[in-house]
Length: 262
Image (cartoon, rainbow, N blue to C red; front, side, top):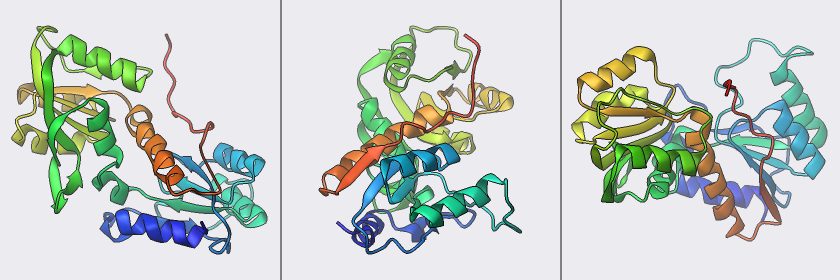
Protein backbone atom coordinates (compact mmCIF):
# COMPACT_ATOMS: atom_id res chain seq x y z
CA UNK A 1 0.00 0.00 0.00
CA UNK A 2 1.26 3.45 -0.90
CA UNK A 3 1.54 6.11 1.79
CA UNK A 4 -1.09 8.24 0.06
CA UNK A 5 -3.57 5.33 0.20
CA UNK A 6 -2.80 4.68 3.87
CA UNK A 7 -3.42 8.32 4.78
CA UNK A 8 -6.66 8.35 2.77
CA UNK A 9 -7.84 5.24 4.63
CA UNK A 10 -6.92 6.73 8.00
CA UNK A 11 -8.56 10.10 7.36
CA UNK A 12 -11.82 8.41 6.39
CA UNK A 13 -11.76 6.86 9.88
CA UNK A 14 -10.32 9.78 11.90
CA UNK A 15 -10.83 12.97 9.90
CA UNK A 16 -8.19 15.61 10.72
CA UNK A 17 -10.93 18.24 10.28
CA UNK A 18 -12.27 17.03 13.64
CA UNK A 19 -9.20 18.25 15.53
CA UNK A 20 -9.44 21.17 17.93
CA UNK A 21 -8.54 24.64 16.68
CA UNK A 22 -5.49 24.76 18.97
CA UNK A 23 -4.29 21.42 17.61
CA UNK A 24 -2.23 20.48 14.55
CA UNK A 25 -3.37 17.18 13.04
CA UNK A 26 -2.24 15.75 9.73
CA UNK A 27 1.01 16.17 7.85
CA UNK A 28 3.83 17.71 9.86
CA UNK A 29 6.52 17.05 7.25
CA UNK A 30 5.89 15.55 3.81
CA UNK A 31 9.19 15.34 1.90
CA UNK A 32 7.69 13.79 -1.24
CA UNK A 33 6.91 10.26 -0.05
CA UNK A 34 3.22 9.97 -0.96
CA UNK A 35 3.82 7.57 -3.84
CA UNK A 36 6.19 5.29 -1.92
CA UNK A 37 5.16 1.94 -0.46
CA UNK A 38 4.45 2.53 3.21
CA UNK A 39 7.04 1.48 5.76
CA UNK A 40 5.55 2.87 8.95
CA UNK A 41 6.97 3.45 12.41
CA UNK A 42 4.17 4.26 14.87
CA UNK A 43 4.98 6.31 17.96
CA UNK A 44 3.37 8.40 20.66
CA UNK A 45 5.75 11.37 20.31
CA UNK A 46 7.99 12.19 17.33
CA UNK A 47 11.44 12.82 18.81
CA UNK A 48 15.00 12.70 17.52
CA UNK A 49 15.35 9.24 19.07
CA UNK A 50 12.34 8.02 17.08
CA UNK A 51 13.69 9.67 13.91
CA UNK A 52 17.03 7.89 14.31
CA UNK A 53 15.13 4.64 14.88
CA UNK A 54 13.16 5.24 11.67
CA UNK A 55 16.37 5.85 9.74
CA UNK A 56 17.94 2.65 11.09
CA UNK A 57 14.83 0.64 10.18
CA UNK A 58 14.50 2.18 6.71
CA UNK A 59 11.02 3.49 7.53
CA UNK A 60 9.58 6.22 5.32
CA UNK A 61 6.71 7.36 7.57
CA UNK A 62 6.63 8.22 11.25
CA UNK A 63 2.97 8.06 12.29
CA UNK A 64 2.66 9.84 15.62
CA UNK A 65 -0.11 10.70 18.04
CA UNK A 66 1.44 13.93 19.29
CA UNK A 67 2.12 16.66 16.73
CA UNK A 68 5.69 17.60 15.95
CA UNK A 69 4.62 21.23 15.45
CA UNK A 70 2.03 22.80 17.76
CA UNK A 71 2.80 26.43 16.98
CA UNK A 72 4.39 27.86 13.82
CA UNK A 73 8.12 28.25 14.52
CA UNK A 74 9.62 31.70 13.99
CA UNK A 75 12.91 30.20 12.85
CA UNK A 76 14.72 26.91 12.29
CA UNK A 77 18.30 26.98 13.52
CA UNK A 78 21.09 24.44 13.63
CA UNK A 79 21.24 22.63 16.95
CA UNK A 80 17.51 22.88 17.63
CA UNK A 81 15.57 19.63 17.89
CA UNK A 82 12.79 20.72 15.51
CA UNK A 83 15.27 21.93 12.89
CA UNK A 84 17.18 18.65 13.14
CA UNK A 85 13.97 16.66 12.72
CA UNK A 86 13.16 18.63 9.58
CA UNK A 87 16.68 18.19 8.20
CA UNK A 88 16.69 14.44 8.79
CA UNK A 89 13.17 14.03 7.39
CA UNK A 90 14.14 15.62 4.07
CA UNK A 91 17.60 14.02 3.96
CA UNK A 92 16.22 10.51 4.47
CA UNK A 93 12.78 10.96 2.84
CA UNK A 94 10.81 10.22 6.00
CA UNK A 95 7.37 11.79 6.38
CA UNK A 96 5.90 12.71 9.76
CA UNK A 97 2.13 12.55 10.19
CA UNK A 98 0.23 13.21 13.43
CA UNK A 99 -3.24 12.12 14.54
CA UNK A 100 -4.06 13.84 17.80
CA UNK A 101 -7.48 15.10 18.91
CA UNK A 102 -9.13 13.48 15.90
CA UNK A 103 -7.71 10.12 17.01
CA UNK A 104 -8.86 10.78 20.58
CA UNK A 105 -12.51 10.77 19.51
CA UNK A 106 -12.84 7.63 17.39
CA UNK A 107 -13.60 4.02 18.20
CA UNK A 108 -10.28 2.22 18.77
CA UNK A 109 -8.75 5.63 19.54
CA UNK A 110 -6.98 6.66 22.74
CA UNK A 111 -9.96 6.63 25.11
CA UNK A 112 -11.77 3.71 23.50
CA UNK A 113 -8.71 1.46 23.85
CA UNK A 114 -8.51 2.28 27.58
CA UNK A 115 -12.17 1.35 27.95
CA UNK A 116 -11.49 -1.96 26.21
CA UNK A 117 -8.47 -2.67 28.42
CA UNK A 118 -10.65 -2.24 31.52
CA UNK A 119 -13.41 -4.27 29.79
CA UNK A 120 -16.00 -1.57 30.33
CA UNK A 121 -19.50 -2.40 29.11
CA UNK A 122 -22.27 -0.16 27.69
CA UNK A 123 -19.65 2.43 26.79
CA UNK A 124 -20.42 5.96 25.63
CA UNK A 125 -18.36 9.18 25.21
CA UNK A 126 -17.90 11.49 28.18
CA UNK A 127 -18.31 14.46 25.84
CA UNK A 128 -20.00 13.50 22.53
CA UNK A 129 -18.78 15.37 19.46
CA UNK A 130 -20.67 13.52 16.74
CA UNK A 131 -22.73 10.38 16.30
CA UNK A 132 -21.28 7.70 18.59
CA UNK A 133 -17.92 9.46 18.92
CA UNK A 134 -16.39 11.96 21.30
CA UNK A 135 -13.84 12.60 24.02
CA UNK A 136 -13.32 10.00 26.73
CA UNK A 137 -15.41 6.95 27.48
CA UNK A 138 -17.60 5.96 30.42
CA UNK A 139 -19.01 2.53 31.06
CA UNK A 140 -19.78 -0.25 33.52
CA UNK A 141 -17.51 -2.77 35.18
CA UNK A 142 -19.27 -6.13 35.10
CA UNK A 143 -18.76 -7.50 37.66
CA UNK A 144 -17.93 -4.53 39.86
CA UNK A 145 -14.45 -4.32 41.38
CA UNK A 146 -13.23 -2.93 44.64
CA UNK A 147 -11.15 0.23 44.32
CA UNK A 148 -8.09 -1.83 45.28
CA UNK A 149 -8.84 -4.33 42.50
CA UNK A 150 -9.37 -1.53 39.96
CA UNK A 151 -6.06 0.11 40.89
CA UNK A 152 -4.31 -3.27 40.65
CA UNK A 153 -5.83 -3.88 37.21
CA UNK A 154 -4.66 -0.47 35.99
CA UNK A 155 -1.17 -1.13 37.37
CA UNK A 156 -1.00 -4.55 35.71
CA UNK A 157 -2.42 -3.49 32.34
CA UNK A 158 -0.78 -0.06 31.87
CA UNK A 159 2.45 -0.38 33.90
CA UNK A 160 2.55 3.27 34.98
CA UNK A 161 5.76 4.27 36.79
CA UNK A 162 3.63 5.95 39.45
CA UNK A 163 -0.10 5.61 40.11
CA UNK A 164 -1.73 8.54 41.93
CA UNK A 165 -5.31 8.57 43.17
CA UNK A 166 -7.69 10.62 45.30
CA UNK A 167 -7.73 10.09 49.06
CA UNK A 168 -10.16 7.26 49.75
CA UNK A 169 -11.18 6.03 53.15
CA UNK A 170 -12.05 2.58 51.91
CA UNK A 171 -10.06 0.69 49.27
CA UNK A 172 -12.76 -1.99 49.45
CA UNK A 173 -15.36 0.40 48.05
CA UNK A 174 -17.24 -1.22 45.15
CA UNK A 175 -16.65 0.50 41.81
CA UNK A 176 -19.08 -0.25 38.99
CA UNK A 177 -19.02 2.87 36.79
CA UNK A 178 -15.69 4.16 35.42
CA UNK A 179 -14.66 6.96 33.06
CA UNK A 180 -11.41 7.00 31.09
CA UNK A 181 -9.57 9.54 28.96
CA UNK A 182 -5.97 9.09 27.81
CA UNK A 183 -3.52 11.95 28.25
CA UNK A 184 -4.36 15.30 29.82
CA UNK A 185 -7.95 14.81 30.92
CA UNK A 186 -8.28 16.86 34.10
CA UNK A 187 -10.23 19.53 32.24
CA UNK A 188 -13.06 17.03 31.81
CA UNK A 189 -13.65 16.43 35.55
CA UNK A 190 -16.94 18.36 35.62
CA UNK A 191 -18.21 16.48 32.57
CA UNK A 192 -17.21 13.16 34.15
CA UNK A 193 -19.14 13.99 37.33
CA UNK A 194 -22.28 14.45 35.22
CA UNK A 195 -21.92 10.88 33.91
CA UNK A 196 -22.23 9.50 37.47
CA UNK A 197 -18.88 7.74 37.17
CA UNK A 198 -17.37 6.73 40.51
CA UNK A 199 -13.76 6.72 39.27
CA UNK A 200 -11.96 8.53 36.47
CA UNK A 201 -8.72 7.27 34.90
CA UNK A 202 -6.68 9.94 33.11
CA UNK A 203 -3.34 11.81 33.44
CA UNK A 204 -1.54 15.11 34.09
CA UNK A 205 -3.73 16.06 37.07
CA UNK A 206 -2.73 18.91 39.38
CA UNK A 207 -2.93 19.06 43.17
CA UNK A 208 -6.18 21.01 43.41
CA UNK A 209 -7.83 18.89 40.72
CA UNK A 210 -7.60 15.94 43.12
CA UNK A 211 -9.28 18.16 45.71
CA UNK A 212 -11.94 19.19 43.17
CA UNK A 213 -12.66 15.56 42.34
CA UNK A 214 -12.83 14.46 45.96
CA UNK A 215 -15.21 17.30 46.80
CA UNK A 216 -17.52 16.12 44.00
CA UNK A 217 -17.42 12.48 45.05
CA UNK A 218 -15.21 11.33 42.16
CA UNK A 219 -12.11 9.16 42.61
CA UNK A 220 -9.47 10.64 40.32
CA UNK A 221 -6.78 8.22 39.12
CA UNK A 222 -3.67 9.56 37.36
CA UNK A 223 -1.63 6.87 35.59
CA UNK A 224 0.50 9.26 33.55
CA UNK A 225 0.32 10.61 30.02
CA UNK A 226 2.55 7.97 28.43
CA UNK A 227 0.90 4.97 30.08
CA UNK A 228 -2.63 6.06 29.18
CA UNK A 229 -1.92 6.82 25.50
CA UNK A 230 0.75 4.33 24.44
CA UNK A 231 -1.76 1.40 24.27
CA UNK A 232 -3.65 3.18 21.47
CA UNK A 233 -0.41 3.34 19.46
CA UNK A 234 -0.11 -0.42 19.76
CA UNK A 235 -3.72 -0.78 18.59
CA UNK A 236 -2.94 1.47 15.61
CA UNK A 237 -0.11 -0.87 14.61
CA UNK A 238 -2.56 -3.78 14.71
CA UNK A 239 -5.02 -1.90 12.49
CA UNK A 240 -2.26 -1.02 10.03
CA UNK A 241 -1.13 -4.65 9.97
CA UNK A 242 -4.64 -5.67 8.91
CA UNK A 243 -4.13 -3.54 5.78
CA UNK A 244 -1.18 -5.72 4.73
CA UNK A 245 1.33 -2.90 4.69
CA UNK A 246 4.79 -3.63 3.39
CA UNK A 247 6.15 -3.00 6.91
CA UNK A 248 4.84 -1.47 10.15
CA UNK A 249 6.24 -1.48 13.67
CA UNK A 250 5.67 0.16 17.05
CA UNK A 251 8.54 2.42 18.08
CA UNK A 252 10.84 1.12 20.80
CA UNK A 253 12.32 4.59 21.34
CA UNK A 254 9.14 6.29 22.50
CA UNK A 255 9.81 8.03 25.79
CA UNK A 256 7.99 8.79 28.99
CA UNK A 257 9.56 12.16 29.71
CA UNK A 258 9.31 11.69 33.48
CA UNK A 259 11.31 9.50 35.82
CA UNK A 260 10.52 8.56 39.40
CA UNK A 261 12.74 7.32 42.18
CA UNK A 262 11.75 3.82 43.35
